Image 1: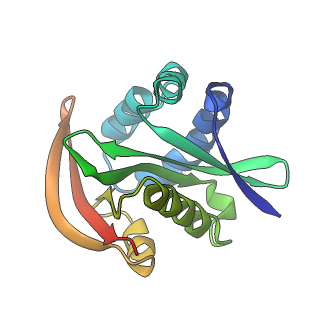
Image 2: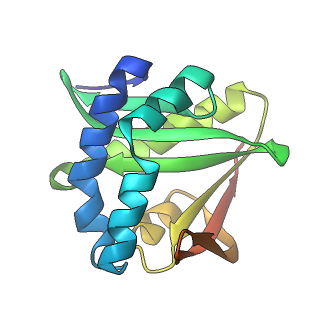
Length: 165
């Protein structure tokens, strides 16, 4: 049985562990090795996750299958536009993908956005990431493309958007 709960600062290590289990299979085929490692270390340091949760700069949801955390999502209001929320992260352990966990997580985030009185959720996804098809099935459409400098590398992303009802 699955359950979704808000993560606390003590859950940061679990979030990092899920990320590490997911990162290589997801990004190594589509990013240069140096970029993949750089981004993993930059974005998913346990201290940073704890800080994001503690300050509320990102809200985290953990998905449990029984007692085991197998996925998470992170989201927040866009600072430059408080009418729009951004899904920053959505990761499920690869061996367990296809069981509806991603759908459950993104639906939970959408419900949180609606509870906050907002109706737009956006996300960035690498233009070569096979998750694009998942997001399309969930009702997201490409709004525009953007290239974002990250250290000495570039993230080449689609920005996908869904108007929630």
